[in-house]
Length: 493
Image (cartoon, rainbow, N blue to C red; front, side, top):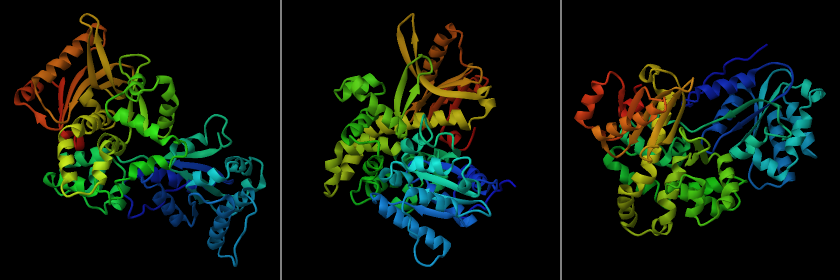
């Protein structure tokens, strides 16, 4: 009795950890049905993972469809179960209690996955479905004890799926696994797209992030061949009204059942994309009271579209960030000029993008996303020896010098396991960094030293390069000053 690793599908890229967790869950041959939850934003490969697990084990997969009445969903599920069992005719379920018991009965001799994909569609029409599953998985029910079904509920609404196991929800405490499938990080994204030029890989990541389906399904594997080809690629595949990417962000938000006042949610995201990071700043930008948008900020966080990042130096302070680069790109670049991009006139989109790429794209998209890439590198990809310690928290923050009342924004703040300040850093995508940037970091380090928190390392990140004088200073610093270029971000520690 136990679990084992399923053979890795040849077409699977990365996802080693997710596949290992899923394999362990669906092959665990312990007696009794068990419940699993899988979630993640659309286009991340959840369905691929689930179908691959079913193919490898002989499991059952059912993908719900949107806006199907309760009775029709039961009819479709009955047809799927009949096809799976190879029974003559078609099973008909009178209610969801009967249907869930039938699903548990699909596996008695050995463990197999039993998948209900797009579960929020089913629960939208049958609001009692989570409670029905709770009852079906009651610890003493014969149907549960005699089954070895690994019932997996999957959905793209992160807020809805996470809510299934929270607070007083019926399924709280019932799940044996809660697996969230994230986008690829910037390194995996470059490898997945097959882009070896790191600057080009970063530019594509600034726009589309790490969502794998944007490459495989939305642009049919077409990527810019060189930096010279990048602008034309953006115009042809992102800003083109005929491209499926053009309306993708609108669809992404519309698919979440918790986002109902779509205009205001888009306006909040646009305010954040413009650089308004605080609750008060966002409210002021959209001419609302801060209390009026509290609910909307919470819902966007629950949906995985916003994160409230705590300030590294100021208690009870945080700033809001958009988590998905393409959502940021849409609200900074596409939505404000939607009519101009939608109007197909020769040369118009090219002219607009040429102007925006030199101004708004750099400040509102490339800069913030590059800073986040640098924080990810410091948190997950850097060697402990580089920082002289193991990073526990990587944040940004604002340092204020009480003597001069001068405030300094710090892009990267790395704290160790015991709260020690391992490093502070500055990230600049479009600037060649020189000695002046290092002098500023040293000034901040001096302010922190007065508080007893001098950082061990000073990190300077650049997407463009470093001046020779700075390279010389770094070389002479004995490791205190670390210069991190694109090559080091993508391949070195």
